[in-house]
Amino acid sequence: MTFGIGMLLVFLITLGVAAFAQGINPPTDTKPVDPGKLASTPPFDHPGLRQLPDGSYEAYYIARVFSFDPQTLTVPAGKKIAFYLTSADVVHGFYIPQTDVNMMAVPGWVNTASHTFTRKGTYLLICHEYCGLGHQNMFAKIEVQ
Ligand code: CUA
Image (cartoon, rainbow, N blue to C red; front, side, top):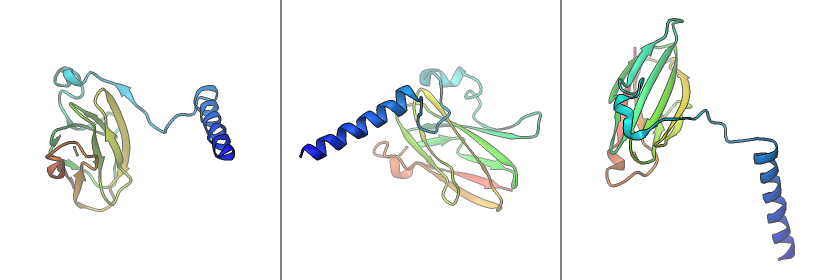
């Protein structure tokens, strides 16, 4: 019992030193955004794909009960797509099977991940975070051309 409590204290102190003294945080690049004003907050006022002057691509997504906006996104194969994601209401998931894109959509925050689709075809985008009664119907499609 003493050993167990001692180990708990050791882990808590290690965690505290890493988080507060060394500034080590979860690997995320979050930015704040007002979830009630997404319709008037660029670039989330026009969710979807855009190409930057340097030729790179950004895809903006809004998750809400129980759908993604955009519902279908067409992206080019072989190009790196940077996904920017937020939620208009509750916490959702954002997972594209067969890729390494796996994020949480958190109201008030913008999460990012990027992926280069090498294979053409239709990819599924699913919510893998339980978000309510319609959770199992929450998905979208990504067409890679
Ligand atoms: Cu959205 Cu589950």
